[in-house]
Length: 177
Image (cartoon, rainbow, N blue to C red):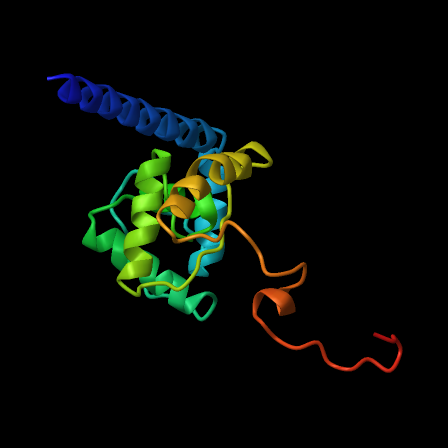
């Protein structure tokens, strides 16, 4: 019986963390105006988007030569998921169209682990939405979970990238070993 109580407390804590994360994301998104949204979308799609309703469906436009791959992917995603232009804007504003992970530390660690283990990625670039607290949250909350799971190193082999990769140091005629 006591075990169920602990699981319930853990579940409530996870839900609370999820809610706090989405609240932060919504707060950040609220700082952007509709005109900013249209300007970013216009840049990314290579055409003036002010003729379209931000809360309307994705217009039937062809991707331009600027950001062609980005525009194609975003337009396809928007149509597939029945998004509005505002939805697309919010997706691009959060991380300029990069993958946005929002949630509890456990959920983020679970997602990164899944992508890594399924070979969808062999590493990740962390782009916090604001500095320095956003980066601190990732380092202090997510990294320890990944370390416990053996997915993130806890110790380093040396002080340089060359050391970490186990590469020999080349001879340097300007510096004696």
